Image 1: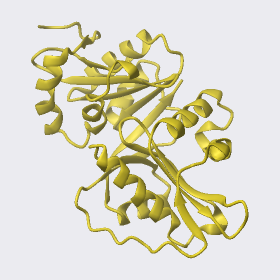
Image 2: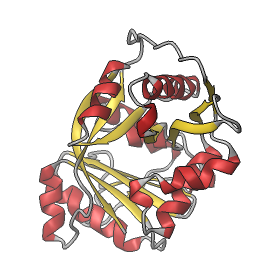
Image 3: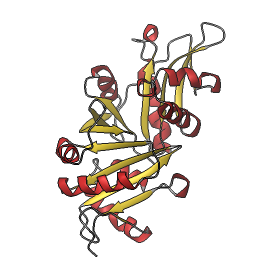
Image 4: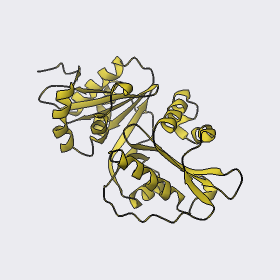
Amino acid sequence: MMADHKIAIEADANKREELKGFLYKYWPDTIEILHGLRLGKDHNAKILIDNWPDVKTVILTYDEGETTFVFSFGTDDSKTASILKSVIDSQSNDSHQILINGFEVFQEMKKLNIDTNCAPFFRYVYTPGAVIERPTLPEGYKIDIIHLSDIEFVVSKWGVAKGSLKMNQLMRHFITNYPNVAIYDTSIEPPRLVSWNVSSAIGCLYHFFTAEEHRGKGLGTIVKIELLQKILTKGFTPFCYIYADDAKAQTISEKVGFVRGSLYLRYIN
């Protein structure tokens, strides 16, 4: 079955199963799509392909609350870019997060008048079985989850959400629907939230943060280890995106078993 160069076709259940071989061949560049195969109607998840059975482009779209996430992988940059553009144009949801893997596809997207509007970042993927040295939790702190009363505080610290109602809503959605880990300072009353990490439907870690006055104590390392363990129990391989210039977060992630992969660019509508 051949499809138009710019038109994607939706993969049914049988095709999804057969696609796994193609996607695993290019792991970890396809991790988002492979995890997305497990999502259902509650996320409005769709797997789109260019042709069958000669697949060169695979695109995952799914909803996180009111925001549609779009992930793509392809072996033909020009074709992937044109199909991705058609998928973006067809979305009825006006809030998108489109992740573009690699400069080659990005350059093709620019020709189609879609430019990145965020700083570049790397994808980091956890290596199962990695030997991790977990720091001892210092006295005066406790491990918890983010309390409902602290959600707005956490949202206010997410740089992507500044000035964006949609991104504020997205972070609230992450906190209230998926695993998160927090550390509270118990030396004061009531205990104060000082470090946290949240996650998404496909096992991606977001918003890794420790208050400045509490840094250097291993708190960030602890919350990341605790959260990746939660994600592993759900059957996902944890991964995250770290800005290319954030050396501190990269170092912590590598310390707990994450390996740096592809450079990504992001377009947020």
